[in-house]
Length: 258
Image (cartoon, rainbow, N blue to C red; front, side, top):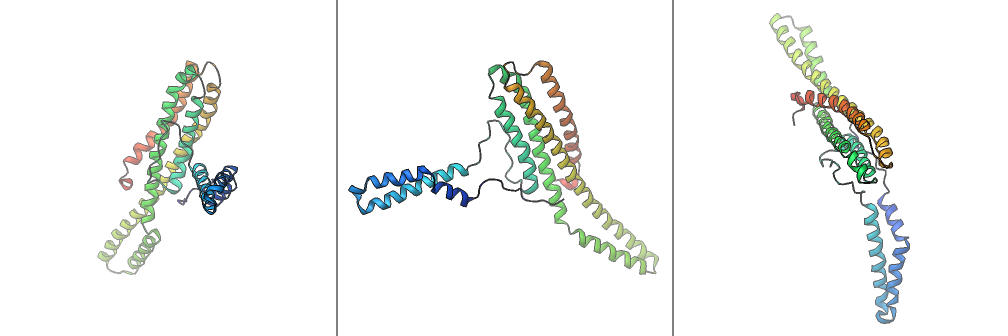
């Protein structure tokens, strides 16, 4: 399991620049500058150029900004990166979509869905914490030279097998056991990372299902009934219970302490 950078799907800076320079509004800025040609004469060209580039710059800035998340959406910690950040972003994006959908309905719909959205926010928070644990587990494991530890163990085994003195053999056996415990710790860290990733996938899948149902309720006139809200809450509780149990287990692991 490798920690990788998330793939960027947005347009590149070069694409944005080309689009901005060819946008009609940019040429409007150029034309406005030329209007002053009788007054500024040669200076009109520089005014036109500045207006043209200024409008293009504003367009680039506007297009390059990340879409604003709805109020209340969880913020992703700045120290999350690579695969851990990608996992957290997937869940937070779903939370933002669900919040946007809820707000498309009337007051009655928003009131009926408000408790559900609070539960969604709680799940998003858990996903972020699990992503942090995922990142810590991989960072701790990557700090260790697993290949070097294995080589050290193999060297100790050879020394033990060649030793004729019983005391020396016992001392080497203890050293080998200590090295094997270190290797077991590395396996535990990788296992913890895999469990965190699976738990985040579980949360994400649950939110994807909720997303469809919230859209259905948000586009209706009555919103969600009490029974429907209860069913949603039970589904969320099930996922929350499993992720909470994993959080508790991870918090008890000394290897994952920050």
